Image (cartoon, rainbow, N blue to C red; front, side, top):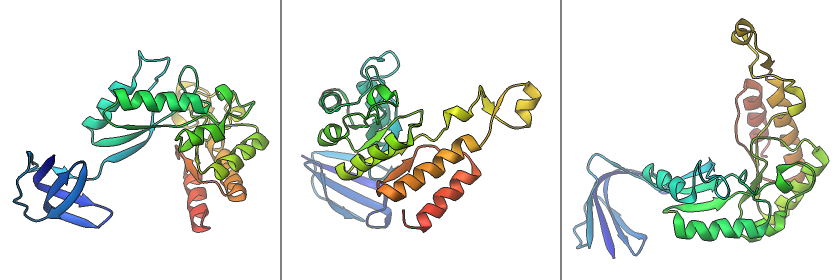
Length: 250
């Protein structure tokens, strides 16, 4: 089947092409991009006033499937992604049960093929049950098509265990997605430690809670060679640390 997309404004980062072009697709492959295409196609889409781009990849979503489907499912999350031009979703492992072995990753991937209109990549947990005590089946999850592992929403506070996970991840070709927060330094805080916290009489959380884990994770990534992605950078110093790491080629 041929699909002809007419009159759209094409943005293609791969070829650096930008402007008004027609796009011809055959059997799910782009076969021609030109300022004007007049070939006969089974379906013609008038993209006047629209952008035509490669599908977006959302690196951090919560599909809550399995176990928490009242919040989200592979189907509803996939439909939302498709509506926004997102064609690949990377799903965090904080489901019920936690995704911490190859069988669970394979199950999600198989059900996603049946239920989701977009591609789903399941991210695995770093530790069993995200409890921070025993390493998850990192090699098995990698073999099942898991591209990254994460404790999502918390940090692995045992640095020795975390380093072991990073070494296995590096050998298995998967990345580390890190939520950087030293839970021992939160000390009952409920919001950012600033003047507003003082006005409200609420316990604050200082920037150092994030910064010390960002620094630790970067240093461990440097030692192990694993690819590190920081899910949230919300402080000035964490941005500086990432900038310095990139300049060093990490």
